[in-house]
Length: 233
Ligand SMILES: *Cc1c(COP(=O)(O)O)cnc(C)c1O
Image (tube, rainbow, N blue to C red; front, side, top):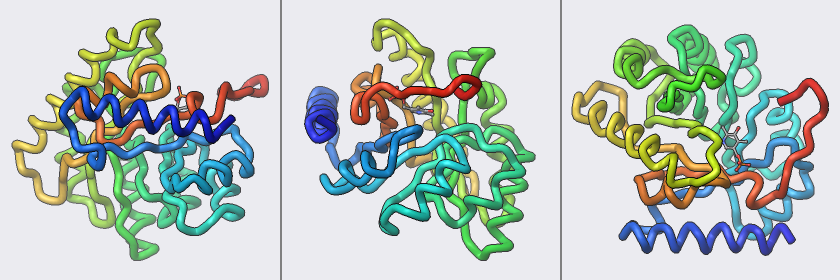
């Protein structure tokens, strides 16, 4: 079942790349395993998948301990600054930096551990009140502030698009994030690269690829629906 889901997603990624005239190597799949047990992750791992995404620090830490060392873990959820110390040096990429304060904490912990933390800036492109992330207008200023901090490297931008019935509705959102990343790249800020665009989830990853996504974050289409306990999100 998971195996079949996984190959459908991989096929769809290839199709979207073909449609957009993109090299499939330029798009990486992050299998979003939040709330799912280690066995499910091992099954997808055994098919060759190495990039996995989690949105909670505690769950991520537990999974890191019991799962293979060569998994590349992506922290895709909101990060509280008091939890940074638990994950520094353990993630491939932190997708959700959206304040100077959080960046300062990441910088401080990274320096302490003698590592460089690769991060993305989370942009709330659609301006939804319920979502984390900076506005498109605030992005440049935040990046300029963060770029001078030691121990932290900005690799690109991330967005969580609105939940919509038709994925086409999110095309302008993805396009806007890409345009923003091009504008920022043009500024040639030291210590900032705009090589990563993390956008697209189960509902809209094919559209996101057509609009330039380099990472798509796909959970439900691979692992099935998630069950949440009351009070969690
Ligand atoms: C849960 C989550 C995903 C995956 O969502 P699906 O719709 O299940 O593919 C992607 N990105 C973020 C930030 C998430 O929290």
